[in-house]
Image (cartoon, rainbow, N blue to C red; front, side, top):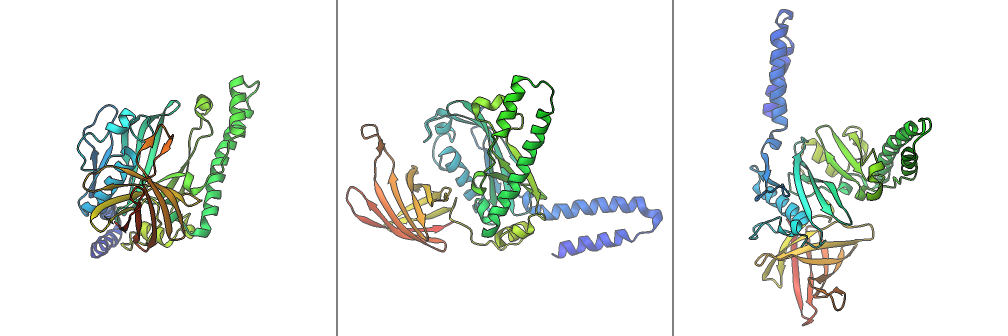
Length: 381
């Protein structure tokens, strides 16, 4: 705070110079503005991102370094690599092996071509990652991930807004997207003797659904605004007709001021106070049976309470899947790590019943072969 006071004092003195010194004053003001900008974004300057080795023409993936708090960087990298690559940091071998070979859980190859770090407010890291994945057809994608640099936590869109503000925010986004579509439709319909292709475009955009929810909308932060990214109007077969593609709409932070949650206000203001946020996309560490250290990455929690999680024993670092639901503060999960072709289903290996209390999860892990109950104790990182 003292540094900011000194900068503004110097700025005040600069503004009071005599008229014949105006050229010098402008020069001084430019220098002071750069100093102030450097101070305000100083924390961002301590975040460095490089390529995760080994890189290749089909694998360029970000790895984060944060000199101010290396544990925050470790947490972010664990999230990104487990979530996107199904790779646990510190494991031997090539991080891209599973996704590039199609041996990941989706059984389709995924290539990563580039990444970009956005310029954001002080406590936020926003990354975009571009790549290509094979499904029914190969298709490019852009992933947007946002992290709180005070904690290393993934920033869930639902945590940014007051509960009663979610529907109004969704409505604001839909209105902006619908205007973009309607303006383009007006241009298409104004054409005389429209070609068959133009008529197909009109049909595409007239039938386009904009029934978005916060959980289905991508987003990222920049210096002065938040930008939401919604799905395009076309499926793969109609992609050639879709000139608009995905829709990006922005709102200044000031514009959404009345909708922000206390967490978002502290995050955007530069406050060090990091409020408790939701269960989705959190990393937990703890033990099974009091003696087997484990790490858990929780996925998205959907409207019906269903979610999945990946966990691993810190000793052998092999990913294991959990699937289940959260109801209130109670979670019920099943564990399965082997698929039976004969039974055509995932084989049940364990049942988990636990309760969330603040930053801790306590409950039981039951082996389905021995029926033995083991304690489960986890704490949010």
